[in-house]
Image (cartoon, rainbow, N blue to C red; front, side):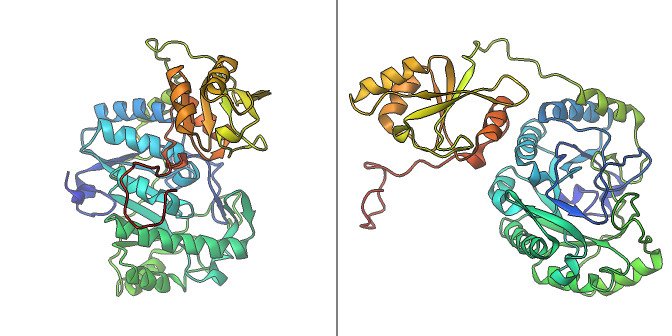
Length: 423
């Protein structure tokens, strides 16, 4: 499909083509002072709201219904209602599923850019063609007025430090997307008295980074937000800002401030039949694969402290045994493993003492135990990350490629001849 068929990036396409946003990303990693995601009115069109949250399999059922009802959908996007990369497993899994079933459809993401650098290769590998990043300032003295907190890694940072990291990651995201040939649009929320005097500076910087399109989005007053007292900028004010920004970068002039569950053409009112379908799909239960043999229930984890998968199997004296069957994986016990020695007999003994487990999570594993345990029917995943998140992702068949560790190069692998010795 021609990339010109994107109704948000091409004003001519919006007259002929529609889009659908799949609301699979509920969590957010920043708190904007202009945002209140708790309020949802079906007649209100603005980012950050949706009438339901879908899991990836539910999103595919909903998408099938959308495609059957609307024949001119050219774009499938994920735009929240939180941030796609505060929900990377749900986002990447959904995008891969959509790409596999509807390969001719354009794939699009809308993000604040904070966590995107870690997933740039995943985005490009999934054939995402368009990404929108919301950048509200390129001066941290301004941006620290816009955000209450920024969650980076496991820490929630105050506005000053958080805004600096957010801007760094946004610049890295834009550069990384352009390096990978992805079309980039930058959205800036025009906030009267906060950043309205600064928008042209943002446009100038985005032009330097070779951003393809710039969108001045007028602030929509949100009851309950920290900026609920701000007024909506007038069309005349927006036109003046766009005129200044146009000197540096092409402007999007037809934005409709789409919801995270928007569907159809940009000017269309909500389709109540599809809204009902979305809510129905959000309540669907996943049908188990009846052809798959029942797995033994537990998961064994090589962990030093019981929180992270961070230990090589050969170093472990105990394995943490988790039951993944409940709403959240639950630690059953710490189980002592056979002592080192005895060559292959150690791994045979380990297989016996783990016979109630079907999966082993490790930070590293040697060839010998891997061979023995795999032949005994165990699945071994070499990963890094939080135990509960990994088990939950595996249980729900979500994408965990970004957590997998690469196997080290070993003797007899193809050698570069660099004379550095074997690793």
